[in-house]
Length: 432
Ligand code: URA
Image (cartoon, rainbow, N blue to C red):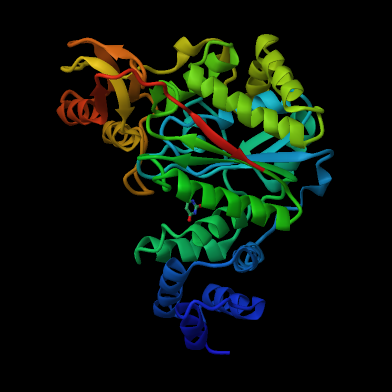
């Protein structure tokens, strides 16, 4: 077999065999296929696409390129969730404790944030002492004991994807639906859960800019998961504004805590309840979606979700007293109000721009080696659908630097205002 023949076959729009896809992935992982040939291959996939069967084979080849976690030592059904990346997305911090407090095992490995989207690990590290790097043995023990662990990658999961993603990033081949689907699903499947809920974001702050593309991506990921024996759901959600009010690490943790106290933003609470309900339903802990949702609401009302978050923080070395007293989180030095100059109905808040403004403040990384300032960020005061008058405060900036002109301008530019009333829609559709 020769790489060049496989590239030409894909370039001609033909379906590749298992052997051909495995030849490309294994050869590239071992360094036997050069970057230039793999670049040509990914570009051919970008233009010609892949069938569901090819994408499943590609996923499995990448999944088998490294460690696959054996969660069989964890009793019961194991669940996981994944978001394709949004701004203000702290959903795992709420969903994991709600679901775990019902006795369902939530074993999650998360990534760090890069660019305008924040990572769950960075948010958790706002809590002093929280340790994201526990051993695989401790990970399994902790999930068995308290039902939940949120950690960084402990094993060498899907190294083929790591290498391929780095190449796609510099060859203009990130935005390919089969390549994104196989990249995400190879890592999700390698981390061993039985039930998975995917949150596929649509809009300016997301990879998928429109509903049609997002639907194709969601359908493909659900199909790949099902082909591998998993119970799958994908929720398509709007990223035409940030999720909730808070963007920035400790600010988002505080918002997650407020949500577990029943005082969360409407859109964010709705998304957390939706994802939690599908995980509960698909684990067999409820007979209907309505019953699952009622159970999740109960875990907020009786504070069991909040108490489970405190247990998680404690188990991973963090100071759980922060969960019960959010005033303990360090404050940024400067607090600035951003005032709008237009009046009308807020019709859109460019999530990408708000994410970038938070990154300029130091809440995110422009490159992986950048250090994060956990105390800084933005809290939106007006969301899509709200009415604004001239000079209304639309956001508060929490900053540790004196000059915030760039951030103020970026936030102002992010807001679109129209004369017509707008009804925001967060959950676009659910695919299972
Ligand atoms: N996230 C991933 O993990 N992979 C992609 O290709 C895109 C988003």
